Length: 307
Image 1 (tube, rainbow, N blue to C red):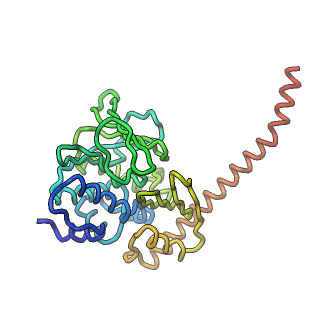
Image 2 (image 1 turned 45 degrees about the vertical axis):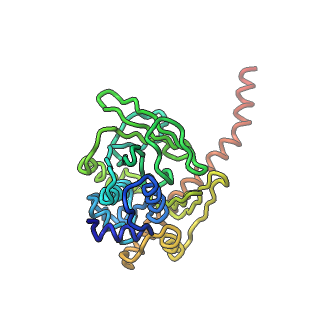
């Protein structure tokens, strides 16, 4: 019998309980999840990272909150299991380097088998595919986005697996092992990602939501709409009212559990980080302009030395 939490979770997704597991049902569930549940790190920014037990994550998502991969894919896998799907969890790793072959454990990947086929399923990448991808080697398109899957050639001492490629994303590679994993295998990396000063989740506020046509991304105070055909448009948010209106209105993230003190602390942190980023960017632009102005003089000096 499906739990009340999963009933509330399905209500959050706006999806009726499927009569039986099917590929069509799986696709509908992933689409709804990506459109209605944001990838976000509000509680990490507030210094109170939630645990990654799937039951806890199901409760959080059913209540209108979001999370990052360990919460999102953890909860989604629990929901799929409750609905009768054959789901396995896998140790993954996200990389900026296109030739990366390691698996560092900073991502939880899912494989779902239904109707005699296996699918790569992921609602925890933020900018991942809108629908599951068949778990087979080759290029895959979802709308105007392109992806690829290929067998992972493992590093020495590591087992085989798969490489997922998103060539247009900031992290173009996610590797994951074929061996199944338990949630306990992600605890240490979750602790590091959610508490270390070196972690991007601790340093930078981020929220993402995707639909069939593009991706909404809020990093600091910059709201972006990423469209593979129209390009990326950016808008800077200037006030707390505008900021929290976007969290709820664009990303569908409930704000009910945030006290006035929480909101003030979050805005102050986001605003301070944004100003630091803007100052750094302006300094970099100034340095680039200085170098450009110096180039003709440097070139003339080099030519005179050569002559």
